[in-house]
Image (cartoon, rainbow, N blue to C red; front, side):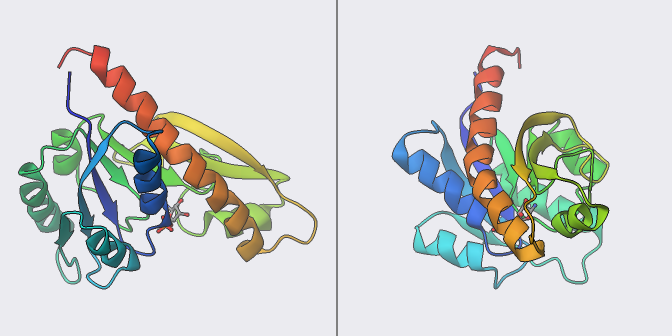
Length: 195
Ligand code: GRF
Protein backbone atom coordinates (compact mmCIF):
# COMPACT_ATOMS: atom_id res chain seq x y z
CA UNK A 1 0.00 0.00 0.00
CA UNK A 2 1.21 3.46 -0.85
CA UNK A 3 1.35 6.18 1.77
CA UNK A 4 -1.44 8.75 2.13
CA UNK A 5 0.69 11.85 1.73
CA UNK A 6 -0.58 14.71 -0.42
CA UNK A 7 1.55 17.40 -2.04
CA UNK A 8 -0.59 20.44 -2.78
CA UNK A 9 0.44 22.75 -5.63
CA UNK A 10 -1.19 26.16 -5.80
CA UNK A 11 -0.73 29.61 -7.29
CA UNK A 12 -3.34 31.76 -5.58
CA UNK A 13 -5.94 32.04 -2.88
CA UNK A 14 -5.87 28.38 -1.88
CA UNK A 15 -9.47 27.82 -0.81
CA UNK A 16 -9.44 24.28 -2.22
CA UNK A 17 -6.27 23.53 -0.28
CA UNK A 18 -7.95 24.82 2.89
CA UNK A 19 -11.03 22.68 2.23
CA UNK A 20 -8.81 19.59 1.88
CA UNK A 21 -6.97 20.52 5.06
CA UNK A 22 -10.29 20.95 6.87
CA UNK A 23 -11.57 17.57 5.67
CA UNK A 24 -8.43 15.95 7.09
CA UNK A 25 -8.80 17.85 10.36
CA UNK A 26 -12.45 16.78 10.70
CA UNK A 27 -11.46 13.17 10.08
CA UNK A 28 -13.45 12.93 6.84
CA UNK A 29 -10.33 12.37 4.75
CA UNK A 30 -7.68 9.97 5.97
CA UNK A 31 -4.61 11.64 4.50
CA UNK A 32 -1.80 13.98 5.38
CA UNK A 33 -0.62 17.13 3.61
CA UNK A 34 3.13 16.61 3.35
CA UNK A 35 3.92 19.90 1.63
CA UNK A 36 2.37 22.91 -0.07
CA UNK A 37 4.19 24.23 -3.10
CA UNK A 38 3.61 27.48 -4.89
CA UNK A 39 5.11 28.97 -8.01
CA UNK A 40 3.93 32.38 -6.76
CA UNK A 41 5.89 33.34 -3.64
CA UNK A 42 3.23 35.77 -2.40
CA UNK A 43 0.27 33.42 -2.91
CA UNK A 44 -2.33 33.71 -0.14
CA UNK A 45 -2.61 29.91 -0.06
CA UNK A 46 1.09 29.56 0.71
CA UNK A 47 0.83 32.13 3.48
CA UNK A 48 -2.04 30.21 4.97
CA UNK A 49 -0.11 26.95 4.77
CA UNK A 50 2.76 28.57 6.67
CA UNK A 51 0.37 29.75 9.36
CA UNK A 52 -0.89 26.19 9.68
CA UNK A 53 2.68 25.03 10.22
CA UNK A 54 2.78 22.89 7.09
CA UNK A 55 5.95 22.31 5.09
CA UNK A 56 5.99 25.01 2.42
CA UNK A 57 8.01 25.30 -0.74
CA UNK A 58 8.15 28.58 -2.60
CA UNK A 59 9.45 27.84 -6.09
CA UNK A 60 9.04 30.93 -8.28
CA UNK A 61 8.35 30.14 -11.90
CA UNK A 62 8.71 33.62 -13.41
CA UNK A 63 11.19 33.43 -16.26
CA UNK A 64 11.86 29.68 -15.83
CA UNK A 65 11.08 27.35 -18.75
CA UNK A 66 8.66 24.48 -18.24
CA UNK A 67 11.18 21.64 -18.43
CA UNK A 68 13.64 23.34 -16.09
CA UNK A 69 10.89 24.35 -13.70
CA UNK A 70 9.48 20.86 -13.50
CA UNK A 71 12.94 19.48 -12.84
CA UNK A 72 13.17 21.80 -9.85
CA UNK A 73 9.67 20.79 -8.80
CA UNK A 74 10.47 17.08 -9.00
CA UNK A 75 13.63 17.60 -6.98
CA UNK A 76 11.75 19.62 -4.35
CA UNK A 77 8.99 17.02 -4.00
CA UNK A 78 11.23 13.97 -3.88
CA UNK A 79 12.03 14.19 -0.17
CA UNK A 80 8.32 14.21 0.75
CA UNK A 81 7.43 11.08 -1.24
CA UNK A 82 3.84 12.14 -1.90
CA UNK A 83 1.33 9.47 -2.88
CA UNK A 84 -0.64 12.11 -4.79
CA UNK A 85 0.10 15.51 -6.22
CA UNK A 86 -3.03 17.66 -5.97
CA UNK A 87 -3.24 20.75 -8.15
CA UNK A 88 -5.40 23.33 -6.43
CA UNK A 89 -5.42 26.40 -8.60
CA UNK A 90 -1.88 25.72 -9.86
CA UNK A 91 -1.62 27.89 -12.95
CA UNK A 92 0.98 25.92 -14.87
CA UNK A 93 0.97 23.07 -17.36
CA UNK A 94 3.09 20.17 -16.17
CA UNK A 95 5.74 18.66 -18.42
CA UNK A 96 5.67 15.05 -19.69
CA UNK A 97 8.72 14.35 -17.48
CA UNK A 98 6.82 15.38 -14.39
CA UNK A 99 3.73 13.39 -15.34
CA UNK A 100 5.84 10.32 -16.06
CA UNK A 101 7.31 10.39 -12.56
CA UNK A 102 3.87 10.76 -10.95
CA UNK A 103 1.98 8.76 -13.53
CA UNK A 104 -1.69 8.39 -12.57
CA UNK A 105 -1.07 10.26 -9.33
CA UNK A 106 -1.64 13.92 -10.29
CA UNK A 107 -5.13 15.32 -9.68
CA UNK A 108 -6.69 18.63 -10.65
CA UNK A 109 -9.94 20.43 -9.97
CA UNK A 110 -11.64 22.42 -12.71
CA UNK A 111 -14.66 24.75 -12.34
CA UNK A 112 -16.79 23.27 -15.15
CA UNK A 113 -18.22 19.94 -16.21
CA UNK A 114 -15.40 18.66 -18.39
CA UNK A 115 -14.98 18.00 -21.25
CA UNK A 116 -16.94 21.25 -21.62
CA UNK A 117 -15.12 24.53 -21.04
CA UNK A 118 -11.52 23.51 -20.37
CA UNK A 119 -8.85 26.16 -19.84
CA UNK A 120 -9.10 29.59 -18.26
CA UNK A 121 -12.31 31.38 -17.22
CA UNK A 122 -14.40 28.21 -17.36
CA UNK A 123 -17.33 29.82 -15.53
CA UNK A 124 -17.36 32.77 -17.96
CA UNK A 125 -17.17 30.36 -20.92
CA UNK A 126 -20.17 28.43 -19.55
CA UNK A 127 -22.23 31.59 -19.07
CA UNK A 128 -21.34 32.91 -22.50
CA UNK A 129 -22.34 29.62 -24.08
CA UNK A 130 -25.66 29.76 -22.28
CA UNK A 131 -25.61 26.39 -20.52
CA UNK A 132 -28.26 25.80 -17.85
CA UNK A 133 -26.07 23.49 -15.82
CA UNK A 134 -22.35 23.76 -15.12
CA UNK A 135 -20.34 22.47 -12.17
CA UNK A 136 -16.92 21.17 -11.27
CA UNK A 137 -14.72 18.21 -12.09
CA UNK A 138 -11.85 16.45 -10.36
CA UNK A 139 -9.74 14.57 -12.87
CA UNK A 140 -6.38 12.93 -13.34
CA UNK A 141 -3.91 15.17 -15.11
CA UNK A 142 -2.53 14.07 -18.44
CA UNK A 143 -0.52 16.01 -21.01
CA UNK A 144 -3.51 17.97 -22.31
CA UNK A 145 -5.24 20.94 -20.74
CA UNK A 146 -8.02 19.62 -18.45
CA UNK A 147 -8.34 16.45 -20.53
CA UNK A 148 -7.44 13.57 -18.21
CA UNK A 149 -9.77 10.82 -16.93
CA UNK A 150 -12.58 12.09 -14.74
CA UNK A 151 -12.77 11.00 -11.09
CA UNK A 152 -15.81 12.90 -9.78
CA UNK A 153 -18.13 15.66 -10.96
CA UNK A 154 -20.79 17.80 -9.35
CA UNK A 155 -23.44 19.72 -11.29
CA UNK A 156 -24.38 23.29 -10.37
CA UNK A 157 -27.43 24.94 -11.91
CA UNK A 158 -27.09 28.28 -13.65
CA UNK A 159 -29.83 30.53 -12.30
CA UNK A 160 -31.49 33.59 -13.81
CA UNK A 161 -29.37 36.68 -13.30
CA UNK A 162 -26.15 34.74 -12.65
CA UNK A 163 -22.94 36.52 -13.47
CA UNK A 164 -19.40 35.16 -13.48
CA UNK A 165 -18.93 36.03 -9.83
CA UNK A 166 -22.14 34.49 -8.51
CA UNK A 167 -21.80 31.31 -10.56
CA UNK A 168 -18.12 30.94 -9.59
CA UNK A 169 -19.01 31.29 -5.91
CA UNK A 170 -21.67 28.54 -6.08
CA UNK A 171 -19.36 26.26 -8.04
CA UNK A 172 -16.55 26.91 -5.54
CA UNK A 173 -18.75 25.75 -2.67
CA UNK A 174 -19.18 22.46 -4.48
CA UNK A 175 -15.47 22.24 -5.32
CA UNK A 176 -14.77 22.31 -1.60
CA UNK A 177 -17.02 19.27 -1.10
CA UNK A 178 -15.77 17.41 -4.16
CA UNK A 179 -11.98 17.51 -4.06
CA UNK A 180 -11.41 15.67 -0.79
CA UNK A 181 -13.97 13.03 -1.78
CA UNK A 182 -12.11 12.41 -5.04
CA UNK A 183 -8.81 12.19 -3.15
CA UNK A 184 -10.34 9.66 -0.76
CA UNK A 185 -11.54 7.56 -3.71
CA UNK A 186 -8.14 7.54 -5.38
CA UNK A 187 -6.32 6.70 -2.14
CA UNK A 188 -8.70 3.81 -1.53
CA UNK A 189 -8.19 2.53 -5.06
CA UNK A 190 -4.39 2.74 -4.69
CA UNK A 191 -4.55 0.53 -1.62
CA UNK A 192 -5.54 -2.43 -3.74
CA UNK A 193 -3.36 -1.71 -6.76
CA UNK A 194 -0.04 -3.45 -7.31
CA UNK A 195 2.78 -0.93 -7.11
C1 GRF B 1 -10.70 26.92 -8.53
O1 GRF B 1 -11.83 27.46 -9.12
C2 GRF B 1 -10.27 25.67 -9.26
O2 GRF B 1 -11.33 24.97 -9.80
C3 GRF B 1 -9.40 26.21 -10.36
O3 GRF B 1 -8.70 27.29 -9.77
C4 GRF B 1 -9.47 27.82 -8.71
C5 GRF B 1 -8.59 27.80 -7.49
O4 GRF B 1 -9.21 28.41 -6.39
N1 GRF B 1 -8.53 25.20 -10.90
P1 GRF B 1 -8.54 28.32 -4.96
O5 GRF B 1 -7.14 28.90 -5.08
O6 GRF B 1 -8.52 26.88 -4.55
O7 GRF B 1 -9.41 29.15 -4.06
